[in-house]
Length: 374
Image (cartoon, rainbow, N blue to C red; front, top):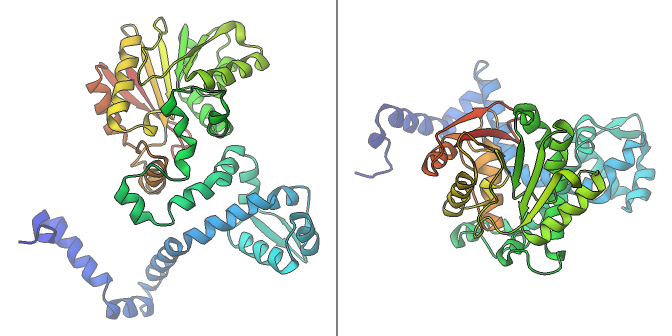
């Protein structure tokens, strides 16, 4: 028997096979579009399918808006097509085509003969991290030019992986190799930090160590919420140097300590009753991720807490962002995968943690939080 047949998977498998035969039938498709009761469903399904087909052009429209600074220009007030064209250095016809495409996506809106910033465009301008992600997506698009080839080689070696390679040398050098990736992570950190800080009470701890903390954007946010908390950051030496500069500028150097090292090879400093992994675990494959969790377990005292915060697969209402976006994004990065909360909890058990729990966040699309107890 063919192992892929519906008969091998019980009643649900047989139902799915019947459903798919029906939905793929041209005769049924014609009927569904014409019959009043099924017509709205058919139209919705057709629109969803077209969005899958056209998604690349939507993302490129967004990229063009960011690259030209179109949204920033309209933030100052309505502009005519001619004015927009001059400011973003496009011919009038090109500017109008971009404006019309952006209007279709809610990024801008027409106001008589002029153009104004749309609601989606205003929301985008309010989150610099998203704009930074869009600006560097051309690297991802290059790697996805042949997605089958990317899947066959298992990632790595592409344009996007250049943002990640500094980790392979343990941050040796003058730090210029870490600047682009660290700056990107720092720019996208405020929204993440806000959700984590709203979800977990760091004030109850005495000392907090942020492992893989980058330029220190998360710890700087924690410092404002928990003024009595002693803070530590562990990351590659070149990255830690950038964090030290941030802490100096923020006036919190006296209560912070920066440790240089690789959490894949070096032990973590002890003496902290809470440790955070903010968007770290999903950047690593299973073996190194489990190694990091065991290193955290070894560094924590009994009863100490590990706070994991990152986008997770299988998130209700946001399943596409998990496996469809981050799954391929991390493949192009050359390391890591999105995991479900159940998978992360299983890894925590394997690392020796006594228990773990999922903590609600305001925007699980971008961040979910799991707290492990040693």
